[in-house]
Length: 351
Length: 280
Ligand SMILES: Nc1ncnc2c1ncn2[C@@H]1O[C@H](COP(=O)(O)OP(=O)(O)O)[C@@H](O)[C@H]1O
Ligand SMILES: [Mg+2]
Image (cartoon, rainbow over all chains, first blue to last red; front, side, top):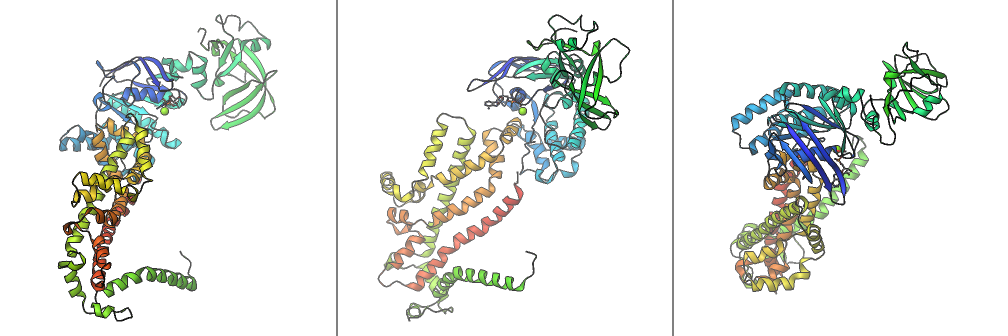
């Protein structure tokens, strides 16, 4: 087990594609860090640089105290789980798990023992003699995890391992991965574009955008204090609403917007922070028309159009309020629900 | 089909049976002819029932050949053909597997250039380059040798191209997973690429073996020593004699047809196995 240190890591592909533009990150021993960001932001590239599958254009990568920039993947003491599992189709599950150990010159009894332990942990003992073709998606996923487990590496690297599974299985595997990591305490770096997966899995999140870090923090830190409009829009679903300060002031101000940090011209409001009943604290009042009502079981999403504006806005309420499409809705927002941003820099201005 | 229509069934069978008969009849005639004496064959009508000289004809062809027609014993010629065909097949497969491996998995300079060079040679059949090749083989003193018979035919653009196409369908993650698992390039080739290619190898083995077995012009040009004559050549020599001994020719033909059939039967098990087992 080991920490992973990234110092000024850059990747430039031929043709001047700057996929990763200088990443500094320290992953502590035993920590579960999730790299999250939209498709094409360089997550996989970064992970593959750590794995040694992609050369490092610039910067230093350390696993433990060792600089591993020039080492082959096998020499880095890491194990990787791929999105499409990449199981060897002609080998049995047992041999898929054993292959890496064989190549490292393990003794037959040791291989046998480790494979049995990993198979037991992942509940794949029953299909050790089957070929991957005869397994379901979820079982293949487990085998892919098993292949990483048996090696007992210093770190696990996951590249969107759940994105080929159906929704239900994804949730189940997510929980299992989390429990497994807690139990083994192996340093893990996990890539996903799914913000919910990121929030639920990670000890810490690293939000990436266009090859750069937008914010690093615990899931709740990032959710409650997004450092930029990008993070605010990316983490949380439905996404945070962004309303221009000038518009809100024009709706009638009551001093609530007067003490916003300098440079604030946009405020973000989470859909759950827009209340249909007036709160006791000082609040803003905005009128809107309900354009679409979406019932999602325990909660409802109200897509509204603000009065005198064409700004699309979402409100999330629990249960199913007695409202009809086309109806005028008045909602209320308190001061502490406002996330102040500057729309030119895209950064948070304070709080 | 689940339908049960007797007429359609009958017609289908008639069509199929006549198709089989059309293909099988010449083979049958050859087998029958190889069991008659020469005089029996020259009586005017072709016999359609087996005669009584089979063992005699085959033994004679196998052990003695037709020396005045320049055909050594069939045993020797079959052996020569077999060595040549195997050398060509194994050589072609090894070289093309390795070159396809290099072209697909290694980033070296002029990689695409080499690929196109190989690809362009697809358009040049043996016959086009036969004179310069002969010159080279003669200069290397490889006339009348197995090396001379097989080496010039080994380079294979077709197989290289097919293997390249196949390798490109194997997801790149397979290589990456193997690298993480500590397999170097050769280990990856041996443990993963080769087993995944079994079906392709078996199919190409059959094609290449028959190609090698049926070589005629090239062995004819470079061998003058009867010790290196091949069976296809030998049959040709026997038929171009003034009074061909047709019963022996037919015996040689039947014997020449057997090895390719055996190779197909043997390899067929591998295709089927490969097709059902190495699904990605
Ligand atoms: N081999 C490559 N050559 C050139 N550009 C690449 C290569 N691989 C990825 N890229 C580019 O780098 C960027 C980041 O890709 P990637 O790391 O795969 O994104 P993500 O995993 O976050 O979706 C993308 O713009 C992609 O087009
Ligand atoms: Mg990716």
